[in-house]
Structure formats: structure tokens, C-alpha cells
Length: 245
Image 1 (tube, rainbow, N blue to C red):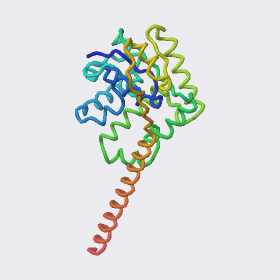
Image 2 (tube, rainbow, N blue to C red; image 1 turned 90 degrees about the horizontal axis):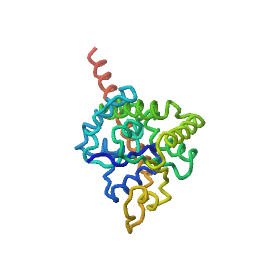
Image 3 (cartoon, helix red, strand yellow; image 1 turned 90 degrees about the vertical axis):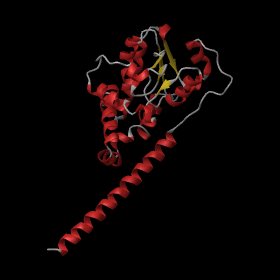
Image 4 (cartoon, rainbow, N blue to C red; image 1 turned 135 degrees about the vertical axis):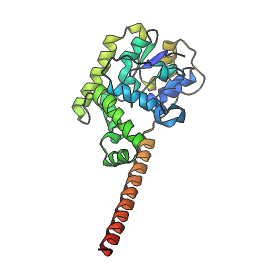
């Protein structure tokens, strides 16, 4: 299919709503959730792991990932937006911004996607589940170190990095190839940019902060339950060992 739209905006800038909107406009869209949500994409995590371990600018066979997609938004693709823009020179660049500004983006990221980087429950969970470990390693390298340049969780540094990224995209991409966009603007600017007719349906409004919180709660409960079970087993084994001494 080949990419026609490349999302350069960081995660937590309305990318879930934008993904659905692009799909409704006829641009099947790649998002972070594609890596883990679809069993057919089980090899994608390995691919992104190789990208994360490679120096920036390394040539990749992007067709392995995007054969069935016409667009990308969100991390990890936003981390390599420059490489993708070179690989797909006719694709348009879509820079999504958080409607509330950089400070609101920081708050949103801290409450959702960054929690998997710092919460002890996720660290324990990753040690128990190899696929989760590979996913955390990939996001650590590609998102938090390469894109955010180690700025998180420091508010001032993270906001500065967000602003610097926005200015870099604006300065690098020709104006006729770039749309700087917030989802609160709705269909009109996005459809004009893509040269398509706005659909007669409401613009998608997906705020998945609540689903992130439910996921973190589930992982926390699972890890704590696992620790209790392991502790109980160790205790029983120690008791039995002492009885046989």
C-alpha cells in the first residue's frame, strides 16, 4: 500500500482519535497498539526492537511493517518520522499537538504511557513475561531515550523537549507537505490537507486515559498476587526443608 501520511506527533497528542479518523477517511493507520493488540503483528515487536537498537538513520525495510497501512500516528513510528519521510518522499507529514498545550501533554503522558517506564509493578511484570520485557526495552530506547532524549520525568526538560520537537518538524518539513493539527479542529483541516471530502459523521473522540489506568490497576493486582503466591510457595518449601533436617 505504501504510506501516504506520516505522523510526527508524540504519543498523547490525540493520536488514538486521529488513528480512527484516518481509517474512516480511507487511510488504514498504524498506532502503538498495533504491536501488541493484533496476533497477526507478533513480529512487529521484534522489528521495532531492532530499530531501537540501531543508530538513528539506519536503513530499514519499512514495507515489512506498513504493507497494509497508509498512515502512521503515535509512537514508535513518530520516533522515526524523519527516516519514514525519506523512505516515503510523497507522504504528507501530520504533526499532532495536545489541545491543552505542552504542559497538558506532560501531565497526560505522566499519567499514562510513562507509568510503564517507572512503576515497580511493570518492572516486575516485565521480568516475568519476556514479551513485556522486550516491549519495555524497545520503548525505553526508542521513545524515552531517542525521542524524549531522557527528559522524562523532569517537567521542565520534558516540556522543553516537546517544544523543541515541534519546532524541529516545522523547520524541517516544507509547508505544503505539513499539517500542524489538534483533534479539536475536527474534520475540516485534516480533510483539506488530504484532499478528501469530510464525512457526515462526528469526529472520533477517544480519550483512553481511563483505559490506561485500568490496565495499570490490573497489572498491579496481578503482580501483587504473584508475589503473594511465590512467597507462600517459598515459605512452604522452607518449612518442609526444616522438617527434614
